[in-house]
Amino acid sequence: MDEILIPLLIPIAILLMGAVALPLLGALPIRHRLCIIAAGTAGLALVVLWNLSALLPIGWVASTWRPLALFGAPLTFTAAVGSWSLAAVMVATTFLALVACCVSAIKPTPINMALMLATTGAGISALFANSFVALIVTWAITDILLAAAMSRYGQEGARRAVLALASGVLATSALWAAILLGQGEGISGFLDLAHFTGASATLLQIAVILRLGLVPFHLWRPIDLATELAQLVPLVVIPTLLGFDLLTYLPALTAGLPGALFALAAVTVLVGGFAAWSESEERFALAGIIVAETGLAVLAVANAGQQAVAITVAAAVAWALSITVFSLTPGWSRRTFWRAIPSFLVLLSLLGLPATLGFVVRITAYSGLEATFLALFLALLGETFVIASVIRLWWWAEPR
Image (cartoon, rainbow, N blue to C red; front, side, top):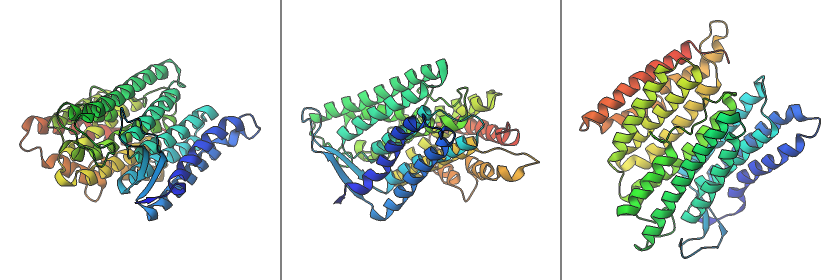
């Protein structure tokens, strides 16, 4: 693996420099154009990140600092195909959200856009983390920026920020505890070389569950706050993708996926689907759909067998793009039906129809549930609610 500093650092630096520049530019007469600048920054980072695909895998040792009492590896970052794919969809989500903000009547403040860019930069740094010390440091930075971004949206936003920060701290603490327990077993400090057993493996699985926001740890998601959806979607997608990223390592780290993941993912589908169907307001129903779709994606990973890593990446990409496009684009309207084409294409994926990523996710999700009747029943019942909810949202969508 080549040790290349500049290519891996460029998209992160672009996002962070944009985050620093936006509040400074807010004092100038070009304030009304800041949204375009923010979207352009995310777009530039996406283009650079896309061009990195020709150089994969790329490595970067940010620092040789290695606190040997806790970790056995330096601050190391690696961009492989899986992490690069998740990073690309993360930046794409922020870019699409900022474009939607530009055409919205209510523009986000410079601070809000700066936090969105900074959180995205920290998020892709966490996706590229290849050592446990790098993962913990980048998780902590992402959690702080995420909480700061949520706290900008009133009292309810501050409450969600506390929940998100608490969930992030618990996930990081569980990971840290797993590493400490594993030190006695002589585990490697690198994610792709370590192996956990016993209590350390259980703690690692808890960290994944917390990051993914499976039931009952899903209440931090701020998608139902009283503000523009475009400002909230990245705050939902970024931390969840961090969970999917760790999930790609979990089968190798713990010699397989835990059986409890089946049941928890199935319950998540049921709870999210029922919540979506029982809500009359669009954004509350959307919150339930996001929870249910997360559970379906995890079910697919749990049943993927030797293809778990590839299915995790595919499920995460399908989840993030579907949620983003479905949230930001309008549903059916007889007068402007052409505007509903993007959300209609996503609707096909959310329904799991053939020739879509959603179909691959659902086929894989249900392929291993025949022997677990209760989990199969809960998942099918939950998806019945999900299917009804997404059709209702698309057909009777509020104007956007």
